Length: 135
Image 1 (cartoon, helix red, strand yellow):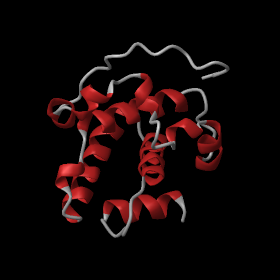
Image 2 (cartoon, helix red, strand yellow):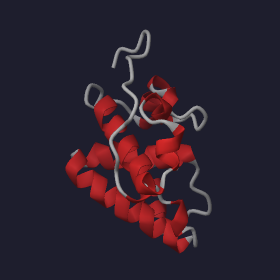
Image 3 (cartoon, helix red, strand yellow):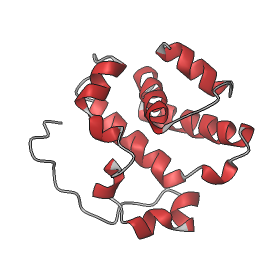
Image 4 (tube, helix red, strand yellow):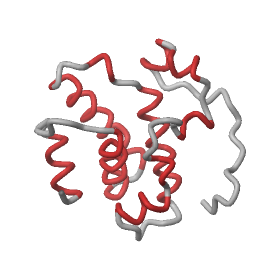
């Protein structure tokens, strides 16, 4: 499925499944087309609409959504020419569900909180750079 096909199917809520890797890829697609301040509200709204269409509004998590978008945007900044496949290969930690890349920034307790689910909260862990990570 092309990037455009995936985004179109996501936005129209036609996808049967939307696994973690697809979340990251769609976020990457939005950020490939628009700066973070335009892409973020668009992705948030589409993700909330998708969850509602699937009867799973309780699965939406504001902090996880915003934090992933910010991390993806930061990593794209030095590699705008990359395709999705090249980006995914360069940043496999973004595709791992367990442990999540967010474990470097957020405690489990904070991410599990109702507040973090409802509004974006800043990280409670100061992450050290990954050994060998070149940005």
